[in-house]
Image 1 (cartoon, rainbow, N blue to C red):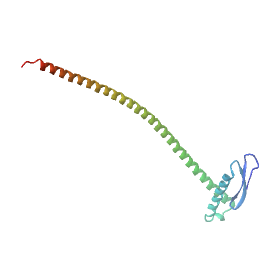
Image 2: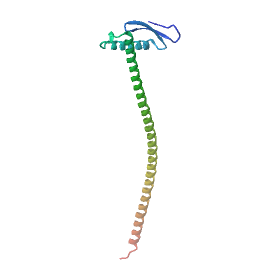
Image 3: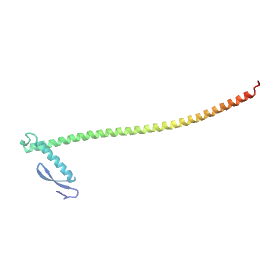
Image 4: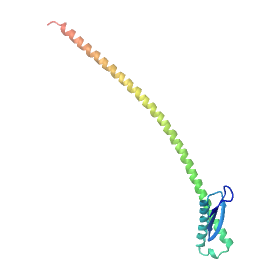
Length: 152
């Protein structure tokens, strides 16, 4: 049963270790229920430990708190490690993007040079064909002059 007493503050009745509590906070009821469920599960885990229930209430509370703190520190360390991996991946991604841009520029330069080389090759082939055509024409012209100028 969720009620809203203050603007922006949400309240929820939750069940923790068999007892009903009213929690209030800026978070939505679903979140408050998840938090309560987590606490309740931690208490249940501890109660399943042999001899736990024979300890004083104060000892039990401290043990639950220690287990929750342990989970928190492990999750914090995992988050730091994940953030570090994320940062490293971002750096690698930036480096790869930079390398890609550099390679694309080199490729464009190489393509331009290839186009220029092909253009020069085509011009050279056309010039060669003209030279061969001239040589062939001169050879025919020279051969017909020598053949008609002979006496036999």
